[in-house]
Amino acid sequence: MNLDEEIFIAKSARQNSYAPHSPYFVGAALKCKSGKIYSGCNIQNDGIMSICAERVAFTKAISEGEREFEHIVVCGGPSLESLEHCTPCGYCRQFMNEFVDQDFKIYLLEPDNTVSEYKIDDLLPHSFKL
Ligand code: ZN
Image 1 (tube, rainbow, N blue to C red):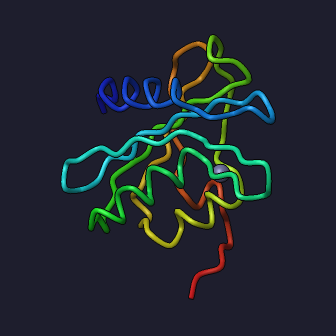
Image 2 (cartoon, helix red, strand yellow):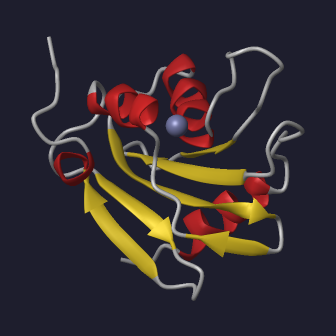
């Protein structure tokens, strides 16, 4: 799987992170089965209304009519100059779970620029689903 385009888009989106409250900068690139890729970055807020890069990418895609997704690439860390192992938070795991099937992959860009691969069941076992 060549993820070069998604990695580039996730890293670029990360540059737009709005993180004045805690220094953590995340970017995501969501590949849809239509072939389109939607980007996202985390957006913090004074209240509890912050939104993560993953959910920004999903909400952008869903609001454009996308319903089928192949994979998402996520990269994040405490400064724009460095990455760390950055897994989706619990909200994002539950949110994604409603829209993805078991073939959906979650790729994390690691500090050494390798990519870790997960399925939703790896990150959200025994999940709640209506
Ligand atoms: Zn999240």
